[in-house]
Amino acid sequence: MYANRKGESCRLPYRTGRFFVVDSEWYYTTRECMEHGPFPTREEAELECLAYIMVCVQVEDKFNSVGFGKHETNLR
Image (cartoon, rainbow, N blue to C red; front, side, top):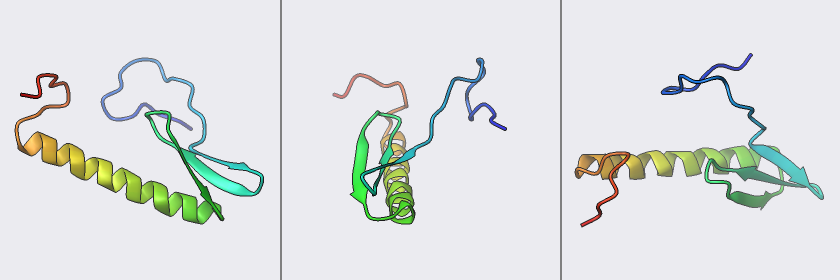
């Protein structure tokens, strides 16, 4: 069963799987619609995806700590 993500209050959007396989090679997609891969196994794709997410969280935390909010557009 799917539920809204943190911060979502609207109807639940259609979601697809993050991982997919093409010619026996695994890939993952990001919210930014970027495809990463190929990886030899789904497990390796999952590990790389987790590493990518961790980096994104660290970058977001760094921007927030220096005064840039999520919706800040003026990058003086």
